Every structure is written in C-alpha cells, then in structure tokens.
Length: 88
Image (tube, rainbow, N blue to C red; front, side):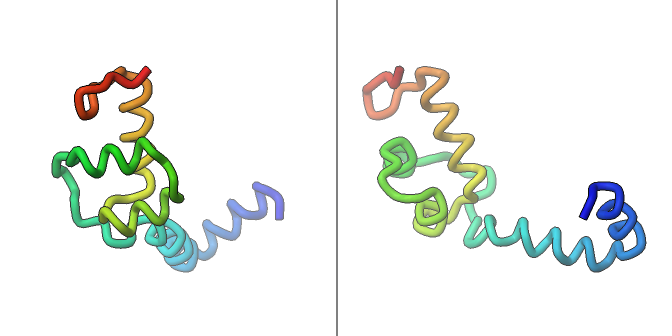
C-alpha cells in the first residue's frame, strides 16, 4: 500500500487506526510503573551491561523499552559516573 493510500485509509477509518496505533505502542509499555522515579544503581548496571534484550530488561525493572534505550545513551554519551566508574 502506498503512503498516499495509507493516508486516505487512516482518514476514512480514524477509530480503527487509533486502535491499531495504541495496540502497537502499548506492547512496549508493559509494566511501566516507574514514571518520573530515579534510576537505581542496579538498574543502570543492568542497562549498561546489555547482556539480555531491552524487552526482557523492561519487564524485569518495569520501565519502557524507550526509557531503557534513552538511559543507555545518556550513560554512554555523557560520561555519567556509574558506581564510581566513568563510562567513555
């Protein structure tokens, strides 16, 4: 389906589009109960080690996949001290 056709379909079926969009985004927010809470040292280490998938980490620490990816980027790119070490 072309972009133009997709756009026309979304305009004709806004409630169905919204349902699909919400279903897609909700799969990444499973168990997200930590909104606006500080990250613990253990959570930061788990995110930095990256030994398991982000989705698995998400379900373990009850944060979204997006939050995990943003935190990992912040920790790596800004030389934030984690447990006395500076990540470069």
